[in-house]
Each structure stands twice: as structure tokens, then as C-alpha cells.
Amino acid sequence: MLFQQVLGHQKVIQHLIEAHQANRTAHAQILVSKEGNGALGLALAYAQYILCDAPTATDACGDCPSCKKNKKLVHPDVHFSYPTIGSKKISTDFIKEWRAAVLQNPYLGINEWLEAIGAENQQGNITKDECVSIVNRLSLKSTEGGYKIMILWLPEYLGNEGNRLLKLIEEPRPNTLFLLVSEQSGKILNTILSRCQLVNIPRLDDSLIATQLIEELQIPAEKAKTIAYLAEGNYNKARQLTEDMDDNNGAIFVDWLRACYQGKPREMVRWVEAIVSGKHTEKDYYIKMGRKDQIVFLHYGLYFLKEFLSLKLGGGALAVRLQQQELKTAQNMLKVIGVAQMQSLIQLFDETAFHVERNGNPRILLLDASIQIHHILRKQVIPIV
Ligand SMILES: [Zn+2]
Image (cartoon, rainbow, N blue to C red; front, side, top):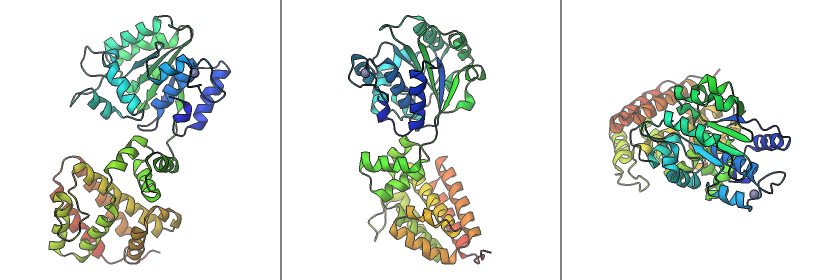
């Protein structure tokens, strides 16, 4: 992977390149990041850059024998370590699956990885045997005479066994680079954390994610903006949302608020049935939503309400994220709903999404939410002072 293929993080990349050119590459570094932020891809590009035979001022060449091997994740001097399943298993037992999964999606999260190796409900783990393997692999001389690099993905999965790696970090062999890529740095052993140089990878901007969705996946601009907001800096989640998010969420949401506002029990039941079973006699945009879709829909509702609240509080600029039809509804609702009601609705959506995520019965939860929305909307409007 090349630096130019990494989404964003220009400053970090520049910092890594400058340090390397000045011979100041720290031999143990932790890239501190969040899931879907691209830190693993950044580590791959960094390794490729260091090992490239003909790097430019800004990137690896992409063409030399070393780059060609790195592109396929088969360079003999780049080693990988990551959580696996089974107490006696080590990373190299899963190297085929690892290459396939990372080449397909360098933004992958731990759950997708565990699914790829058939974990089902088993927890991932970086085992004692794996720590021994890391020490062994790094104690060998490099095959091609240059740097030897170990990329350890998710060091938070190291138990106390991780202390076996301390000597390696404290007394490294020459020309070794130990790159840890963490998504939960608070869970890393302190003994390891304190011995590595920290490289903070900032959250990806919403605008950057939206632009990438438009260019890479040809997502319409308004939808891309909504997805970028919902993804909260996680590009992996953003890509999933392009497949999972129903384009009709806006219309379905407006239908719901309308039914709740009118408060006719039959209409509310009909709306809930349309969501859960997809049956609606008049409107053909209702399709059955699985639990995952329902959660995305509720998060969409939360997004709508938060945008709406900022409109109400004077943050007019944010409203551009709403599509034309939703904006019109928002403006009409602005006239009748106060800030306190808005906050109650946000809390209700938050709670409902929480319970749906934890396997609550969606029929009951959505109907209950409908009744509560009705009560919230019909409360006397509290004037804003
Ligand atoms: Zn090269």
C-alpha cells in the first residue's frame, strides 16, 4: 500500500517521512487510532516506504521488487501479528486469511477479522505462543539486508504475556521497527505503552469521508454527507452504510413523526408493521428491515433530530446536511416543537436504538416509542427564551 492510497492523515505521513529521512525513526512506535480510521493501512504504507529501493520525497516508488512484495503482503522482512482464536494458535497459522482480508479491506475492524477466521462467538487473543513467535521472528537477521518490520495489529489483545516483548522493545536489534497499531490504547499494558513512541492518528474529517464516498463509490453528495456524519470518522462503517442505509429513511422517518403527531393508534401500528414486516398497502418504499437496518434507521433519526436541534439553536449552516424534503419537514416542525421536546426525543431515540441493539423485541420497542413520541409532540410548546 502506498501513502497516496491512505485516506487523509497528511501531517502524520509527512512527520513519519521526515523522521525517517533524518535517521530518527523510533524503533518502537504505537499508532494510536480508532476503528476504521485507516491506521493499519498507514502502517502498511510506512513499511513499504521504509523498504522501498527507490522512494521519492513523498512516497514509495510502487514498482521496485520490494514494493511489489509489499503490495501483496508477502515481503519476507515484514511480519504481522494480530488477534487469533484458539489457545495454541499463532498469527502465522492464519496468514493466508490475514492477507486476503487486509488486501480486500485495510479498514477492517476486529469483528470482521474474527468472522473471517471463523471465530463465531470466540474472543480474539494474542497468545503466549504468539509472543514467543514475535521474539523469534524479530531475532532473525533481515532476509534482504534492510529493515525488519513487525506490524502488530491491536496490542490491546495482549494479556500479561505481552511483557515477554519488553526486552525486544528496550534492546532492539539494529534496523528493526516494531509498529503497533492500536484502537483502544487505554487497554494496552502500561509497561509496553511507556516504552513506545506514541503517534496519534486524528479522526478522519466528515468532509474527507464524504468526498471519498462520492469519488470512490459514486454516492450522491447529500447521501454521502449524511453517511459521513453517521460514520463518526470510521471509514469502514461509512462504506458499510452505503450498502445498508435505505435511501428512503428520510421519507419513512417523516411518515413516523406524522403518524405519531396525529396519534391514531391504527396508523402507528401500521407504521411499525411496515418496518418490521415490510407490509404497507400504499407506499411502496417500505421494505422489511432487519435488526441491523432498524438500528441504522434509528441512528438516522437521531442524526435528523440533532440537525434539527442545531437549526433551532441557530446553527443554520448545519442544515445543509438535510436533503430538500427533510429540510422542509424540519422547518415546519420548527414552528411547533420546542427545544425541551427535541431533547426528550433525542433521548428516546438513543434508548430505543440501545435496546434494539441488545436484541429487544423491535415490534414492542417501536410501538412503545411511537406512543412516547406522541406524548412528547403533543406537550405544550415550551417557548425559547
Ligand atoms: Zn519501491
